[in-house]
Length: 126
Image (cartoon, rainbow, N blue to C red; front, side):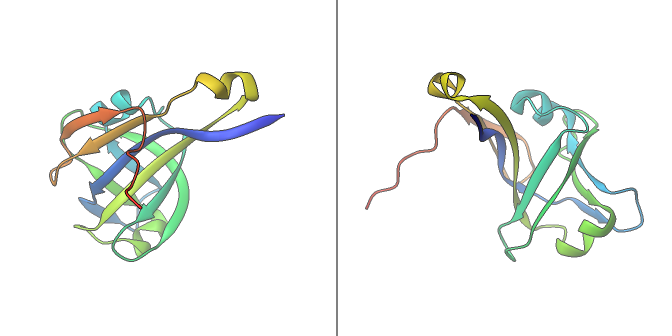
C-alpha cells in the first residue's frame, strides 16, 4: 500500500505578484525551494489563508533570496498580492518509509525570508 504524506510546506508566505497572462505556475524564491526540498516543476497545492481559495499547480524557480511568491496564469485570479498562502508538496511512500518520515516545514516572515524550519507541526492545546 502507498501512502501520501506531506513532504514539505512553506507556511504563511506572502504573495508578491499575481500575473494572469503568464504561463501557469507559482514562481517561488529558489532558496525557499531548496530549503523545503521542493523541485522545480513539482506539483504543489496552494491554500490562500485570506480567502480560502485552494488550487493545484507546479513550482518554478524564482531568483534566490528574492522573496518572490508569484502566482501565474488562471490561478492568479484566486489570490491577490499581500495574501498569505501555504504551499505544500506531497510524497508517496510505503508504510515502512512513513514510519520514520518527517516533513520539512519552512516558516517565513512577511517578506518571505526564512525565519526557521521544523520537522513536526506543534501540537495545539485543547
